[in-house]
Length: 389
Image (cartoon, rainbow, N blue to C red; front, side, top):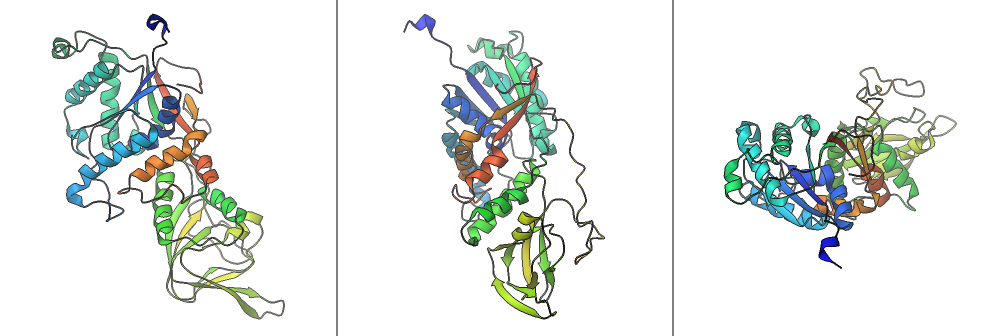
């Protein structure tokens, strides 16, 4: 092929605050475009050393920043991202860095990598994180300044010529009406036998559910409930409203006979879901579930339980309807990444300190339903609705 006739390689730059931002904001999109021949770079302004350590075996506080940097590299390998840069501006301290310093850093990054497309956070910082807002604002300014030779002339003197990317996108997380509860029920009902999760599964689901609701992938109300011995967690005949996962302790399952007597039909322990039968059928609960000893459960509900929720067959108003949703999605760009969800989950699993999950832990269909689309707002140029960057 004549080199002068070659189609230029599309180049994408993701500019974020912490390791793992790239995966949750645009992991599927980066993978999809790299698979199509694009070149990608991810920049993280911090090492994420102020993050949680959800698996103590993965790191100590003293080495968390170094560990998360290595996790970032592994995650980007899973995504196919060819270049990774991680600075050390201080996790939780980006808002205190002088804004021009961050802008200069990102301008240098743009002039070095010379991307066509820049991805970053919007003014909401995904969920209000000050670090996200600081790096997103700096990236916006850098996007419009990097092509001006009068800006940061020392970079020009050092051999970095001006470069103006063609498109700027903010990651966007629409508040999805989808319920993780419903996806779990569908998965549980598809199994040939009752699911029994390990402690690793329980821990992984707890963190996965927390992240899913925080980023708007699902809209469940998720809580951990504690019940003393003898407490009726579910009453036979009441409307189904929640799905339960036993975290500790055990429960007895009883059914009422027509004559009013009661018989024990099962006993369940940690790692077992209950409540899916009624949710799947939409019919009243077909059994009592009573705490045998002190019990804790992870509870998935379609909304916040009301203070006046009733029990039994006449129960009403068990949960409040959620009012956090907008009828329209202000996103301009929806990328279908269903095919690349397994690689996105592999990248999430690379962050063992934050998300102690394995790629085989959850149903692939469930994950595709939750994470099969990524949304963006195109800041420049102003767009119509689109399905590609």
